[in-house]
Image (cartoon, rainbow, N blue to C red):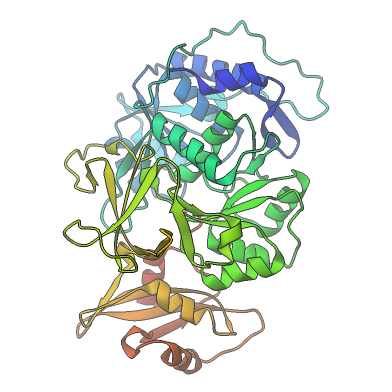
Length: 501
């Protein structure tokens, strides 16, 4: 496969590929360093087609490994740092990893998997290529390292990674993301959002998430800059705002919870920022309008692991006009809304969102008979509808649907009402088991600082705006909502909080 990093290094050797507090790494530097990482992986016994697990925080080491795996023809298996040793052991075995790269910090979590079949590779050894600090008298590596990339037309059907889904119910599935998934997604995203020569995309999503991988490959294909935050995978609002300003960031991907917390800082976004790509979960109309009032450019988007992160996007100019919509499908993508028999439903009717296009995954690893992928289309399980303009509106992830007394209840609808209460800062609505009703509606609520509200007051507010069966039967005040590794609210953990309350 033609090497994308080598091509960018040849075309723009002095452009900055990776930037972080204290250093800038050009495409020529990164290209040479990745060659060295490749040599060390080969020394460790890795060969084309092997599956390579990676358990590392965001950083230059992880970025080098992404490009090195691509150059060697390895299939990357990025592992979630928040998983337990038991969960990691299962994923490493299921994905048939030949080795796992870990750091001295993360090694303990995977220590037990080392065997004759699975090796542990220390990141400090595999990726120990010194990064020049600004002002250092450092000379870039020479090109005496063997050229490990192949020339020729790219094989876009080749798997780039196996990315595990969040696994809200049952075992997570390993989505096989191809180089073609990333390539066509990058082209389509650029077509919708535009690409400028001096773009600098701040990496806020973890690299074990498809959204993080997408940023690395997109910037490489565009010849633009990935900015690595000083805080790594941790989301620290003040530090992130500092990075936006100091690194002259032009693009950033955020989930609604992150954006809400940034807005609460009451700091101005830097003038360099031309776009916030807002996705990962439904953005409430109130949040969209709040950004519009402050002149913050956001593009609401819908994506999923199985489609390399971005499927439909509403441009900033339309976000205020249609708060809550995620727009039309991207170039090369298709979106249909179907009934239980797979037939297209009329405009405005709820149904399952079905996604097609060149960015859709190859399939789930070891699950060739999974019915979610049919004739090149992925049946997402998400509920939504298309309006008269062909714009998509997401109602709910199907796995989050609450069925109470035979009635379907969409948590997002209840959450949007609760967020209109003047005392509510954030909320997560879940279904709890009920012997009488099957499930009952429950809400975990975060109050605004210094504001008090009684449970009865908030439930009464709901009754003014919602049918009785949709209103919470249980309500719990919490300091914060638990988050997943990708920054989304974890409904599973909220359910557990109710169980222990």
